Structure formats: C-alpha cells, structure tokens
Length: 220
Length: 220
DNA sequence: CGCGCTATTTTGATTAGTCAAAATAAATCT
DNA sequence: AGATTTATTTTGACTAATCAAAATAGCGCG
Image (cartoon, rainbow over all chains, first blue to last red; front, side):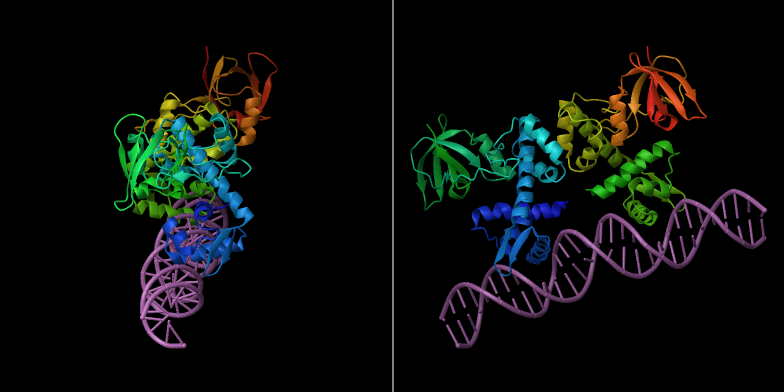
C-alpha cells in the first residue's frame, strides 16, 4: 500500500503533467507539495526505485503506467468524495476541497465504488473537474477560458479550476458555477480585466488571471 | 492536531478503561494496539507530557479530561462512520469496522456533524455500540450477556461487542443482531456451551466465550 | 527474608519524511 | 568564452513512531 505521502506525490505529478509537456520539473513539484526542493528530489528518487515514476536527473519526473494508475485512483477518490460532500451532505463547494485532501487517502476501493453508485456514476465533480473512471480513463478535453475565448458569444461554464476557498466563494456569489451561461462583453489586456455579462443582473468584472481559471464551451 | 497514532492510543485507553477500573496496564494497551510494550511506555510518556493522560509508572495509565474528550470524539467519528457505511452505503456490518478505523482519523468535525444530521442523530451504531454525543456523553449502561443472563426468559439483543469479521458474519447469518429476540434454553458450563432459541427456526449452539460478547436486556 | 517470575521501563537502532545549507550542473548574458 | 544566475542535488541533522533486547521493579512464595 502506498502511504498518503506517496499518493500525494503521484497525484501532484499527474496534475502538473497535464499543464507541462509530461515532464514535471522538481521545482514545480516541490512548490505544489509545499516542501523544499531537496525533499522532492529525495522522494522522487525513492518513487523511481519503486517503479512508480521515471526520474530524469536535472530535467524532471514523469509517471510510469503503474504510478499513473495509482494517481488516477487517488484523483477519482478525491473527486467522488467532493461530489458526495456537496450533493449528499450539502456542504459548500468552497470547503470540500480541504476535506477531500484527507479523505482521499482513507477510503477503500469498496467504499469508493459504493459512493460512485450512490451518486449515479458522475463524470465530473462540483467544480466541473472530470472524474477518472474505475479503469482510469479521464476526459481530457481542452476548453477555452474566459481569458481566451471569443467575445460576445453565448457561453456555458464547464469547469472552475481554482481550489481556493476565497475564489470559490466569490464565484458562488456571482453564479459562476458549471452550467451557468454568460458572455464576455470585452477584455482589456492593459488593465488585465475582463467583463462578463450574465443572463440577468449586473456585469461582472474579473481579473484576467481569475478568468483564466474558468473554462467555457460555446453555449446555445 | 493529534496525529492518528495519538488518536488511536487515546481511543484504546478509553475502551480498555471501561473494563478495567480506570487504570489501564501497559501490557493490555500494547496488546490492544499491536505494538511491543516498550513502544507503549514511550508513547504514553509523551502523551503524559502533552497532558492527555496521567501515567502511574509500573501501574498503568488513565485519560485526563482533555484526553478523554479527544478519545470520545474519535469514538464518535468511528461509530457514526460505521452507521453511515451500513445505513446509507448498504455495506455489510462485518466489513465496516476496518473501514472506520481509517476514516475516523480523516473526517473533520464539520463532516462529522453533517453525517450525524443525515443519519438522524443515532445513539447506537449497527453493532449496538453507543455513540458519544457531541458533548462527550455516552450511554454506559451495563447489560447481561448471553453467558450470564437468566435462562428461558424472552430477551432482546442490544449489542454485539466483537469486531471480527468472522464472528459478525456468523452472527448475521443466524439473525443475532441488535433488536433480535430470543431465549437461552440452557447452558452447559462443563462443555462451555450455550443453546439459544430464536422465535422461529432451529436452536443455535454457541460457545460461552462468544455468548459473552452478545449483550441482552429482558425483552417483552 | 530472599528468590525468581512477570510486567514494565530503558537503551540503542531503524524507517519515513522532512528541512537547512552547501555543492553542482545547466542555462543565460554579456 | 567566461561569469553569473537559477534549478537541482547532496549532505547532515531532526522528529515521530517503531522494535529488539537488556535492565529494573514489584510481587508472590517457599
């Protein structure tokens, strides 16, 4: 059995390798795990000995197929737990991430599958993040963000990729959750601002950085 | 925050002090936690430094009020989780103990209270074990067991105090769960046997040791 | 009273995971 | 190319939790 520390390393490598080209630099991994770089190096070498990752010294680390499988299972637990906490226990979507960080290492595969059935085999969690299937398949479709999409067309929010409580609370307040419809009325690169128009109510101003964390698709 | 190791020590001390007279001997604690005695001594001294237990060298250990509060919360989490796993996820009562051993250290107070509400504030778990209240009150009524109760009177099972999967599976199979009605038809001390009569079906023979782990009350 | 048994405590080592700080390699910039 | 900056790795040390085995304390018993 992998310790929760090992599970966390693998999960973070998986998440970071979505952005980078598959090779995750040590610095990024260390930052993401909130450890000093030396710790990450040491640990990654141990993971490599166990066959869970491939380490290219001075370049970065990538998951082996076995490591990827472990990471996907952890991610599946995390996202199913979040879905449970919001849909069944009616918790606020801003607070469930921290909870799931703990629970993802404590629930067995048996509980996982019961939970999955209870929730009706969901494919995304409350933030719109895709839930890996039991076999490790995960939707990896690429979406535009509010910082990059076309202006003045009807859009549908598909995902909010920010785990911080503050941002999620703000998003909630302004109806910025998966499924919501809106348009981007304009974008000011110099000021780093985006203006959103929800179907009803006042326009919403947003920083470009924040806008980049909201993924959208063309919405009818 | 107490580590799961610390939580486990406190929980085991709490459970063992119900049987003994409050002072738990190191040997019993070590056995219960499945560590060698020296480890228990070392750890208990550390817990004493933190004010969670009082250690009487060479005699035993007891919880301080603070330690007791932590232990009761852990126990509350354990038993509410078991109840959730059986009542909501429909898992088998024989397998939930092992699951709860992990989850009891991973769920926050926020989740705990949501679960409590979802379950309707239960006072016992699926095995009949009392669930400590949010304030740390726990029913500690003393019951007779099938090894000690009167013969040939209607009884009601209130609690099954054995966590092993094998025993619980056997009990399940024979309808020996909390709420079930039965009588003890006879008891053979020499052979170490007890014979039970359920309302319908064949009599059930049981060892005295096993009978001692089923608590009963007079049943109408 | 002293002897030996048993439970407990001590001592010295080990493992997983971490940090601080020094050493090294690679990349960048004149 | 040579010098400087930046990322990574190495080294040495630390903490929490554990075990094995030796030392000790208490107890009961002859």
